[in-house]
View 1 (cartoon, protein in one colour):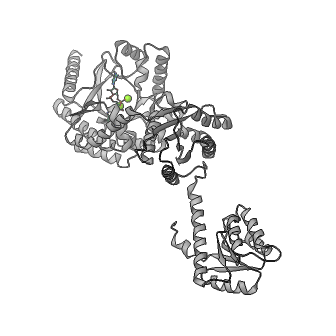
View 2: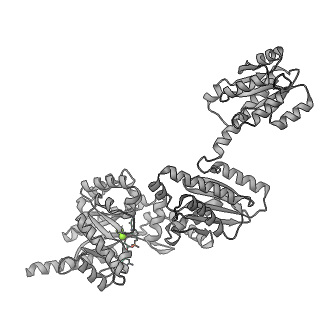
View 3: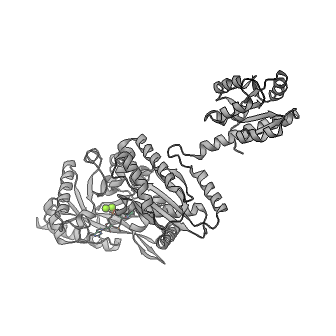
Length: 576
Ligand code: C2E
Ligand code: MG
Ligand code: MG
């Protein structure tokens, strides 16, 4: 039984008694009025008018069958043929057995035999019919998602389970379907348009389920779940659904991605089947190829192994911090403006030397830890370690070498960020300017207003902020002009082919002029070869980081780079 709030339970329901005989109305009305407010009608025609004008507040109709003008059968069929009136339950009052069956077939919910039973029995039947009708109304409202017309997730899982009970031997596929770049559709065209797209998708999905034992729900936002008879190929399925949106909206860029988990043995619960399908769907988000066209990925063994590996990393992280398995490496950044490259700063880059799994690249565990919040702890560990190292070098060489740390997009959302960074700086008695913060470009595009205010705060505290991976996100020139930053770090991707592709070198040239316009220096990372270095120098790049100078190295090895720099600059000073 659906639980209702105490307020709803305390409302006195209204019941209509329809009977042409005064004495019957009196008897029944007397009984029912103990628990309900009662309205009366003497015939079907009068009752119909009253029902229409009280349709929103009537909880039940008690209906006599034999009446002048309009009898109970006719009224019952009028009620049943009206979408809005149909929800009001009708109990028929009758002395004929045959009539009972006929009325139940016509849509009555129950009958009360004449002469009347004990008052308590009547009240119980009325109460129960009202309760059932209200429960089913609540179910109808919560069962379907109004935007897509599909089930809600809660009911969807229930119906999948019911399906499995009735068809234990069926081979079913769990599908998770998602709209590519849906946030852009919403941003560009507005939410109403977005809702319209979801509605088109809902209707088209339903069409495609026919004959395949399928059910579907909208899980949230633009994510749809589909449970359907096994198919080995979904190319036609996905393009049919996407084409419906393209035809209706004219948006030829519209595309979908789908993750499929096929499982004939039903070893897993429906929920975990969908977890796997979800995983297969979300791995595509990062794959550049699949993002702009329809794509279907089946969950397979390799994916399973990768998931197990990820789980392992997640569960090992705490211990790894305690056992100091994480090592902070440093990669130098050289200022190339003058006659010779001058060591300007370093970037702190984390490495995980796992006792069993060996070296694990940050490219593997950072995105994973960003997804589940563990990055919070890890980044603080790195910042702390980097600050300790700056202090150690400062004490040893009486020279301050700024070190940049990576601030993950997740950190930006943390309201305690400024305080935590300030604490670390204070703990090692450093200046805020000695610690540079690298924030990736895509973090700016996702939460622009929040990040701008956080970055403003950090800069007011004296931190310098570098925009990392510039060119890989979607910053508009307009947005860039209003961004509070101290340096642009060009994405490695542009540097890789800079000497091979005219287009890439032009791009870098343009990005350097953007930085000029913003009056901030440009840092190129991923510089591996002499030609790249020369070209970047010619184009006016300020700072360079890359294997050409040095790979990221451990703190001890980095110390020799500092020593070399100090020797060179001492020699230069001597000469001047
Ligand atoms: P990033 O911040 O853009 O770091 C630069 C990456 O480029 C580093 O990869 C570095 O080793 C690599 N690199 C530098 N020069 C060259 C080169 O000449 N050739 C090539 N092929 N690669 C070069 P790494 O250390 O694997 O880090 C990858 C990414 O992981 C980093 O990209 C950063 O986004 C993230 N990351 C690393 N350490 C941390 C950390 O402590 N916290 C956070 N939140 N992210 C980190
Ligand atoms: Mg970086
Ligand atoms: Mg970078």
